[in-house]
Image (tube, rainbow, N blue to C red; front, side, top):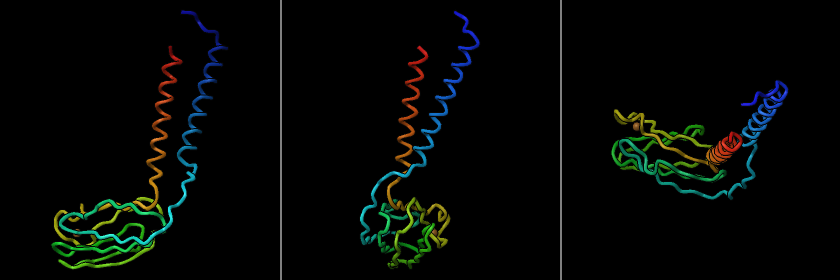
Length: 160
Ligand SMILES: [Cu+2]
């Protein structure tokens, strides 16, 4: 194998660092640049959620930002509660009864909702997920994944 002169080695190192820097900048752009996704027009949503030991049905709900949401909490067995993280929203439904309340989804993101009444030994696991607006984290993750694949392919090519 031919020995490379220190100068060429230095240049190669510089090139490598430039590549890494560009890559890091690209990652930052993907992670933090806002996507130009238009907000869907807000609508009135009526969501019926059944609470039973120890689950909510449905347990995953997707809505749009600005939606006026009315939740009907139906308890099918014992007393259950519904408490939404990030929002000051709580309901409590007696056995066989329906409890209703409304709120405006003015904050985007993924929020957990949980039972707020100790209903049994698995009560802490009685949780669900409310997604408000598009799941940008997922989009960004997918793009980052593609970037990683491209970089991997390129590095294989340059090594040959
Ligand atoms: Cu509970």
